[in-house]
Length: 248
Image 1 (cartoon, rainbow, N blue to C red):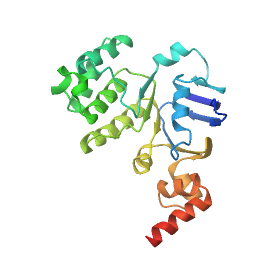
Image 2 (image 1 turned 90 degrees about the horizontal axis):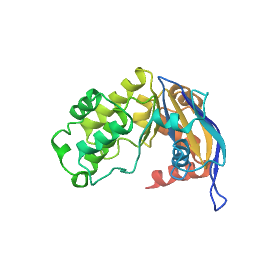
Image 3 (image 1 turned 120 degrees about the vertical axis):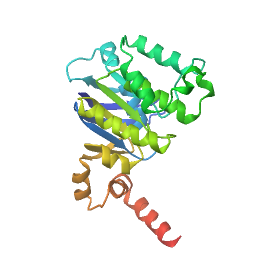
Image 4 (image 1 turned 45 degrees about the horizontal axis):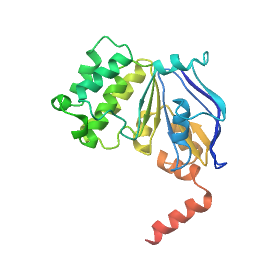
């Protein structure tokens, strides 16, 4: 289980990136964080991964230990940005990740390579890959290490349709076998299909949390996109958007 407790981060310019944010992602569960640009999604992820220090609050695995080394061994991450060692070939990079996580079996790596149809380019330098191929390599390297928790930040961006379908099925399979998935995405249609719970944030604060069905009922909405518009934006902004669209 991933447990985020009263997480706050204040930046040097005295602006709060996130304030008093709490969230639990249980094993076997997929939870999506959604919010406007600048709402605090990246700050939350960076604090979880210890990329930036928190101002207050804690991030725990199993709610038991704050051992950062042990925590990082059990967490995988697919970033929105392409973060790869591009001087290596695809094979060299995947083998490097396997050694770093002390993985001895190549079974999942080989299955993922076939799933995302990327075997041919693996002997080429990563710098020659397209954006989509690089994204596939990120996904393969994250799912092959048998982590207990995986964080996905806009994981489908740049993927072809077949790969998006495969990724959704892979996320579902990972959770069904007991993994915890924290997903950050603007694709609320996919999130509604994938997620057990949705957490919407704005201006660095949690606005609402619940299952897709609960949120649609509470906001009298037909889908999560309507929930998002009603919950994450100030009333004036939401009404103005409707006026602009209607008068366009």
